[in-house]
Length: 268
Image 1 (cartoon, rainbow, N blue to C red):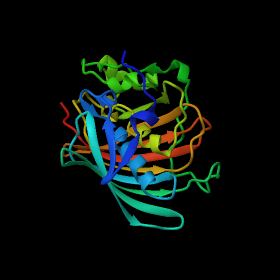
Image 2: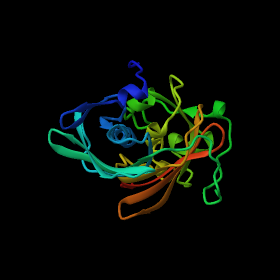
Image 3: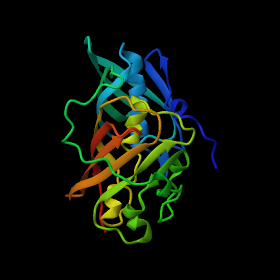
Image 4: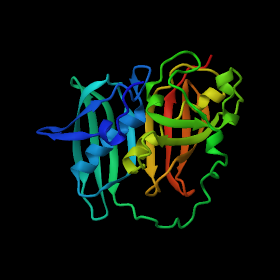
């Protein structure tokens, strides 16, 4: 098993004369493709380091080219400075080629502030995490998924039909996520959490790689320590594209992040 490195280490950035430098870790990948949420977390670290506020609030990212594991450069441009939030454009490049570009809003989340109204979100999934099935480091088709050796991601057995070759047709996955070192999540690591699950389309019918093309993330609150509960669902599959919605609750049951992404897909 590869050495475990804390998420703060694998998502660290360091300032340079031209912006920031980072190292894409080979273990945070599906096959040899870095996880998109992990790449977005690198941009989030750079955005926070560029301005005076401390929490990523929103991110809208386009995934242009998948980088290889290894060094990348991140350029940040402050688009607007504000009293309550700053807007930053962050671009990841490798060997001069743009890989991911995002516009992020960075502000400050109040700790423990109650939601004014929250009936628009789906209900938090219920279930026993101890009965969840941990996703292994190899897919049912034999594809290596090294990122699953770096986290504890457990799926509700009721959404695991695809693993036995019998997808339910629901297009929905439910489960729990934590870091193996039990490190708490923060607003930047939530950018990874919203993209941590396998494609929800697996519970429709088998597919190959489902690459993220665009992803929008809202961080709604500072998460309490402990495992996250996640609902990940496919909404519409058409024209070799699927939009997936993800909702993330912390250990207290509070909605702390949500995301929508558009991904490419080829169904059998």
